[in-house]
Length: 301
Image (tube, rainbow, N blue to C red; front, side, top):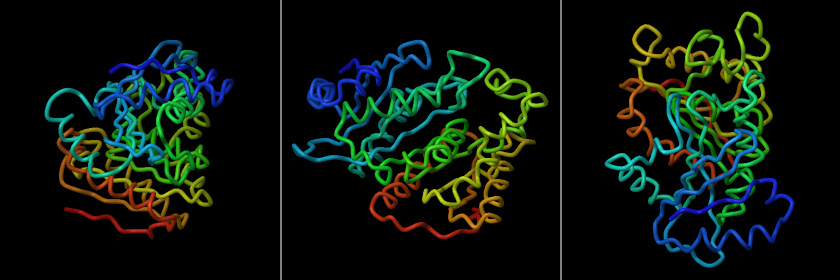
């Protein structure tokens, strides 16, 4: 079933009228997986957003929300593409009474606002357009403690950085194989096309890089989880392992509670789907308890 979501600006201006007009259509489908078309001024185009909704909701039931971000070269449909992957994601999601949102981060958007590309304001799209639209269309619990964010690779970077910049919106954030230090990849994955050349724009890169944003978590009360496959090194694959270890060490230096795990595997969908149940449980625990997790040493398998 396809729904056309009103723009976030319209939602903000019309308030309850927008909510009442949009919500019933989004709630009537028997399928747990919905697709909405959202007109984005920040991205200068219409984008498709996929949403998993718990089955058989009670009339007044509201749910926590988890935003699940895709990686570079991908799109909003990556996590729920037809076939075994979709079946597995739906099966895992069914164990939790939560709404899962699969946003559009564009293939190389890095979940940042680009000063180079006026049509790549992904952070603004996320914060000012997407979240208000989802909260208007679906029965979400809108407090930060019941809104989480996670992602893989570029999406792992997005999950951590968006939570660091907007701790008022998210109570938990997790990264799978995240590229968490943008400055370690000065010529990779079109990052210069989003932020300019590193040598000329280092402050901008650091203002949008998870490693350098780590101090923002000191007083943020955001639960944090990051993991990576031990084969995902700079020599073999992307260097996400080195990035993750550096992020982990920085959080230890800052005495910021978090979890960091290393597992067998690489930068692959096999790895990410294996880790999905752990990430869902992590966010569910955050929704059910406001108490921070303690620092944990790397787990290596």
